[in-house]
Amino acid sequence: MFPPCQRRNLFLLIAFLPLLFGRANLSSSAQTILSLKICELQGYSFSSPYTGQSVRTYGVVFADLDDTSRRGFYMQHENCDRSANTSDGVFVYLGERLDVVSAGDLVQVEGVVEEYYGRTEIVVAPPNAQVLSHNHPLPAPQELTPPFANNSARYYFETLEGMHVQLSGGRVIGPTDSDDRTWLVRLDSGVERVFPDDPLGTGEVICVDDNGLYEIAPEATVGDTITSFTGVVDYRLGIYCVELLSQPQVIAGSGPANQTLDSPPDLTIATFNLANLFDTLDDPATDDQVLTNAEYQRRLYKRALSIHQALGEPTLIAVQEVENQDVLRALIEDPDVIHADYGAIWQNGPDARGLDVALLYRTDRVSVLGYQARQGCTSLVDGLGPDGNGDPVNPQNALTCDLNSDGVLDGNRLFSRPPLVVHLRVNLPASSTQPTAEFWLIINHWKSKVEDTPLTQYTLPRRIEQARFVARLVEEIKAAYPSPNLFILGDLNDLPDSQPIAELLQLGLENLTLRAPRPFRYSYIYQGVSQTMDYAFWLPQTHLTVLEILPVHINADYPDALTSDGTTLHRSSDHDPWLLNLVSTPHRIYLPLATR
Image 1 (cartoon, rainbow, N blue to C red):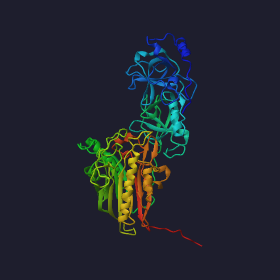
Image 2: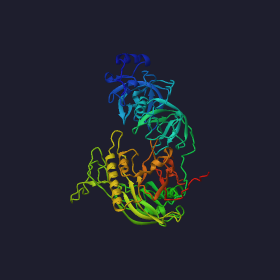
Image 3: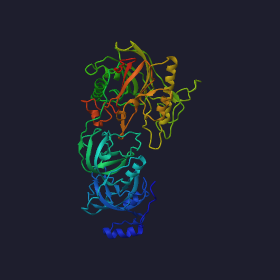
Image 4: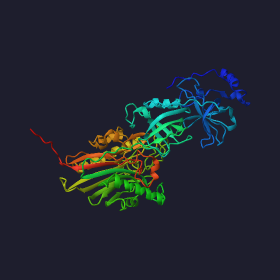
């Protein structure tokens, strides 16, 4: 924590202000108004020590947003207390869209200090924002140099909240997202990409959003560079972001890199989160998204194009976030895009939005021997899952299943999207060492982290139980089929070093995504941090070799604006697919030539 606040003598400050600014417009309730400098009301912590109190303060306006939707302005008292541990700036909220001040005005305000979702601001009635004089130099912007350590970075940005800042140049490590936020690191940092397990931390990430006077344009892709800009540090949605006060230039980079296939495989398997692939019909039983026909066709085309061009029409595709069987058919039955004949396996689940997992398989090479969606039962009371009230703070879960097979409903369903277990036979190429091979696939989409907060992982216990349930499925298959060719695929919504992933590794399964070189090892980017959420695990067998695993980077690195661009496969989802290339063994073994 920062040291305790060292406050100036208020009596001397109150006496000094009239001499500096001339006559103040004092009301009859002036005795109850605290006269403070901005740095004093900001304090040394994450919230103001004067929250809820009426204050009078002053500063120079450097970000005039009062006639925009922000309905306010930022002002700063430069070198307020000459301390780097307090902010010298603050947002003044007027509540109305009025042209009250201009940049360069010296302004005195009277209002109430509030913490608006964590942002310190002063709520001021427009008549109580008094312009004392004009044409003052703006406070000099402070160069952004956030530390790498996460906690230190949070403190660092808090000390700059509401202040005038600049960045001399940045590298994009997270594309412009659906909230119009772009994620950068300093251009001179030497950082090319940020990963969650970076030993120094991820605090160096700088968020830039569009709530200021300018925005990043065109929207940025990972690898682009951003020229110098000025802005103000704001706090919203739990994130410190810079609101632009000057227009930077976006310089296009070379784009995300992808690995290439080294050898022709006998069999290809992909996992792909199709990202809200709904249809145009309203399902009254679910809270589904109803698409226009144009949007529906665009989503189908982009995903089909990804399967055809980027994935090369794999033998097997485990998919997540698809609404129903008709959507699957529409996806795979467009001969102008997908040339192979695909079949689909889908089972309806209890997801509140109506999204499920499924398998697409090439009918010319695959015979389905059996499949089943497997649901679990849990005693968790977390407000989550298909039987929860959606409130993990005050959780309730309806009793819908029988935990111990005694005929009494005493648990709730574990999965909103139950894992799909598929048993199939695959015809291998004539060049392989065996004509066919049987496979088991367990296709997953585990609980997301949407209800989590920075302090509490409400969703983790359910994912741990989901992992243990899938582990029991693996043991069940191994008991019935010795040495099965078994793969676990899908969006598991957790990091490689998490406990849910550890539950699978205890079975002797290999996390194949770890084979990808570190610079390529990601399928999702969250707030500038590249991470793995989508996985492929397998049970190693002597008669089968995973030649390589390729993360196919067609989505995560690209700006969200491409989601609505029907001419490109980029941003067909917010996740990148993984592609497995396998061969039967022994296969094309080349020995070095020995000579004397």
